[in-house]
Image 1 (cartoon, rainbow, N blue to C red):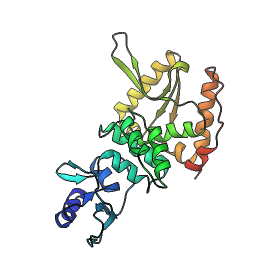
Image 2: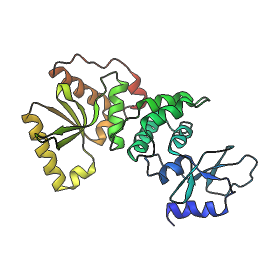
Image 3: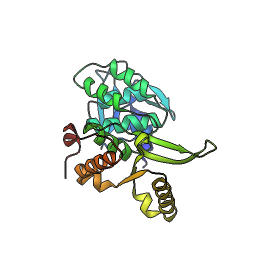
Image 4: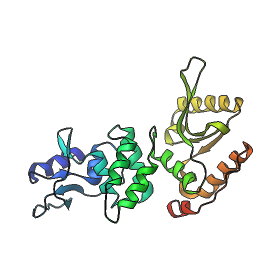
Length: 258
């Protein structure tokens, strides 16, 4: 019983105007969203359809698109509706992944959030304003937000270093190009693959030889030592001549020390 087959089984018996929504729609769109134990649908008000294993959100005139032959809420609608369920960082992660999958643009999310109303509209607008293109992983999003919430300058996402022929030589997860400070996130694949480790080593040697400072971050740094990550970035920026400092405490709300 695959996830898609489970959704299809519910759709087979769903009311005519039922639309896959929220966590389930995001998953079908191959976006990054926290796991939900139920299948989410938007259904017409007054419908008594409520099978076990589903969460039904009563909506009138829900917009929808066909995705792999299934009616799902459009990406921008999925994003704004999930503002009711997700905290800010997870919502930005979702937005970054929807943009990466080319389901919607950054501008499209901002426009959709601007049209929203209700108590969660502020979160949707804040998150939409923090969504960026060219983000390749949730950990990159979380690292960038840690810096931004601390009041540090926002780094560029997936900065490309070109060779003399204008072709991409290296790509950096996050970078301050003017200061030659790079921030690289090492996921599990960096440790499991000998080829990836070799590529990482060559890239870091090249960067250091060309005046770059490279800060390497792993998962436990974000979850257990976010303050130390900020200290390392501030030290690297200072060594490059920047006076940037941690000047906001908002990061502590979203990245508590565990």
